[in-house]
Amino acid sequence: MQKLGDLKLPNFFNYPPYFTLQPVRDTREKQVQLWKELILDYCRTQKIFVIGLEEEFPLFSNPVIERTLSHEAKEAFLSALVAEGRAEWMDKGHKKCLILWHRIQDWADLILRFVRENGLEDSVMTVEEIRSGTESRGTELHGMDRTVLMRALKQLEHKGKLAIFKGTSADDEGVKFSL
Image (tube, rainbow, N blue to C red; front, side, top):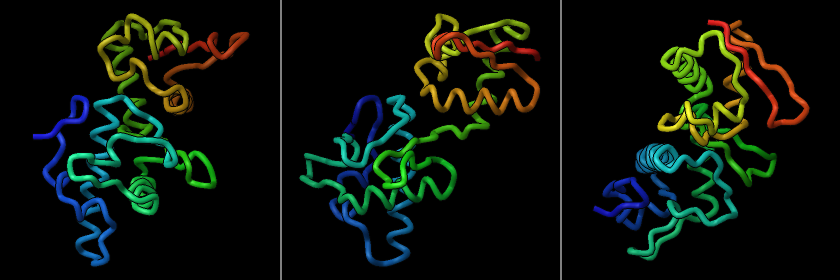
């Protein structure tokens, strides 16, 4: 089975028609579903949060069968993810897409679990410590996109689970957990 990074690619990845938008509605729906799942799986295993439509993205081409997705197909598959809340366009021109392999609420839940598992219920941490500190190593939080992290933290702040406070720079932003 073909692999890309740590991800075993599904069989359809070697089937040339899946690299061309299918004209028959039922076939296209199946194609879109398969691509949505593949994009989310790939981004999760590679910790990718942003896909640029005009940049090289390894998943969108298969040199073995000499096929590459068209711009229209890439946009269709990413728009399908946007429609179900698993991605968001970062600009009006649909050139960059933020991939939410976990929804914001799921990231918030992961943060709460991380805090509880590490005994940080009444602790203060910087945002950077959550993203790249020793406590987060080996967790899905390690290396996560700052924008996604801040949105999850703001959701938790809204629910009264923590307070975000500003430092003198973005690196100084802190979080006081109160669980």
